Amino acid sequence: MLPGDLLLIGILIGAILIYNIIKFGQSYRARRRVLKAGRAEVAARRFLEAQGYSILAVQERVPIVTKVNGKPHKSHIQADLIVQKGKQVFVVDVKTGAVAERPASPDNRRQLLEYYLVYRPDGVLILDMDHEKLYAIDFDIKFPAVKGPKTLPIPYLVCFCAGVIVTFILLYKGGTIS
Image 1: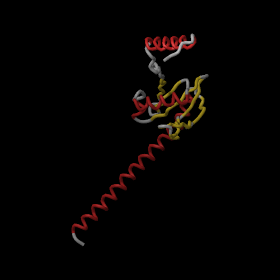
Image 2 (image 1 turned 180 degrees about the vertical axis):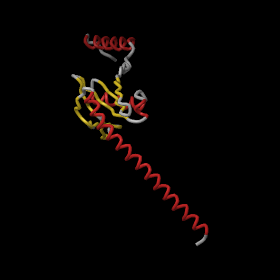
Image 3 (image 1 turned 90 degrees about the vertical axis):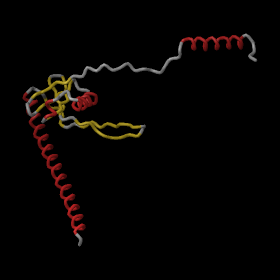
Image 4 (image 1 turned 90 degrees about the horizontal axis):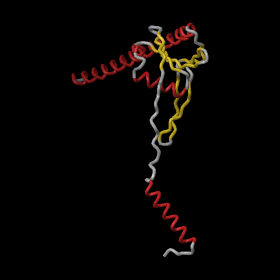
């Protein structure tokens, strides 16, 4: 075996080891994140009940179909908690870490707006479990006016109607169009 062959084998073995170490690290972090989220959601239920909320649903999924050029794509929207206080129903998104400290961030806003439009609750709440802080999120949406099809200008309509009337008079009076 030549020294170049050993170098190539060493590079391949090193690349495989580095790949597996990175994958293991990602898997480990993902497992920790899932465990932390699970513990946070259990604590969130206790926290919300202590605040006077009733838990209506946990991890409720709503199936949706998105059509792209007529082709359906199935997926779902899943909220952490659906709660009720008095007669009002809320969707709760339980957050931990830095993302919980920025309730108005674009990523949070998109997710909460999605919940608001799909579940149609009375309100949406973010629960920061690291600081046990509840944020009420309201959406004041001013939808733009829908622009309909362009209408024909009035002079064209007047000319068309005049042409129809003249044609009708000529045909009705016995005239002929040549």
